[in-house]
Length: 338
Image 1 (tube, rainbow, N blue to C red):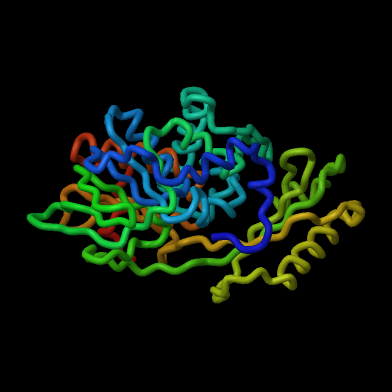
Image 2 (cartoon, rainbow, N blue to C red):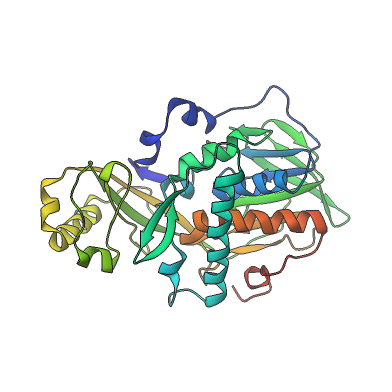
């Protein structure tokens, strides 16, 4: 979730905002081929990948609105190169593959996903408004239900048999839990070590100013739509309270002004904080749910959920289709020490 006032919903048209809260459809397939639980960017990208993989019936359920969690407060930057030397090479390689997958989605998904090319220190990278990307993905999905909470599951014989929701019981053939944090659902024996890492962000009014080289080189801030300046997010370790800390955003603003004095004349319009789900090693989990042959999960995407969404979806869709773990997914499995 995000607290404060993020810029992303204010950039959407009314029709796009409506796609984030479709409610409960008149006709809900209660025995879909694939049920995706979670309406963040990972869940929507997974549902999209399942459609592209040929699954005829895909249902996505979300307890709030699409993007109500970390996805709606993220920066939307798709910059694998910024992770070189920071994250494990195998992870950076996966990020590069996922950026390519974003580009493919932009060209092949009906209406695109709002991908915007950017230059990062001479490297062609990209970004999205995360809520616009969610809305456009959702527009191409056959069944999205919001305001539907999963309260429990029934399992037997090594299979998940049914899913109990506030909209009634569903009996999917296969299920993907894309809930950000490890799903805590009655009947699902799964408790992975994880926490949320809070991060503050800020964004200015439109300006024609160009950032100095020092700001660009330090990657302190970047220009987005209408010439607005976006900065963040911080790593506020230990701060789990669902509040915006004005002292944090003021410190960020003063740091930016110190490096870019001209920006002092520009109005600061947006300040917010989001909560990134993270496992102890800061790598995501993408794996089959232990003990169940027809249930998978993606959790703990930390700072790379938007970036990794299309590849994560492709991996999960392939796994559901073939029953075999796809090449490249092993480093993100439960077998590692969390």
